[in-house]
Length: 163
Image 1 (cartoon, helix red, strand yellow):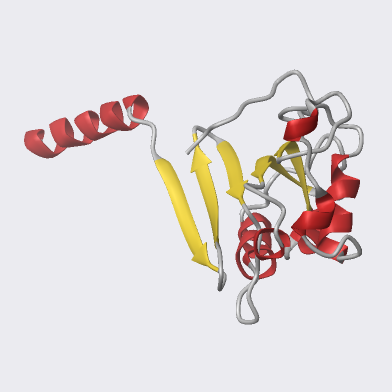
Image 2 (cartoon, helix red, strand yellow):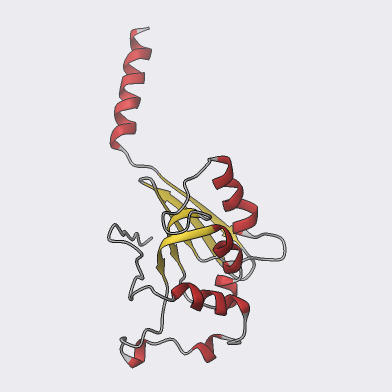
């Protein structure tokens, strides 16, 4: 009885001191997508989808619904996610962005951008990215409106984790 109690107290102590990171990596065909939870924060890296799997519809939305996750303070019709990080806006990295935008609002949207205040060599050449009329690229550009470079925060309580 005493050994079990000591082990239980020790486990509680460890849990209070050790931060656990959960990471799920999705193979979405030609690219990877990753969902990360750490220290009560949520981070989604790239949101490509394949013909067989959409990380938003098949994983993230059911997870947030099951957990009764909190809604965004910026858009109460959408779920809050702390950060969406887009490594680069190629189709295989953003093809699920319309689904994401329908259900989620990222407090921090981190992506290469084309803000006019940036040095010319750092601007995105959208024509080289792909078809400028592609709905995923259009949606990403719409989501960037009103956010400031380089990390495009929505509030003063921003954070960023680089993995």
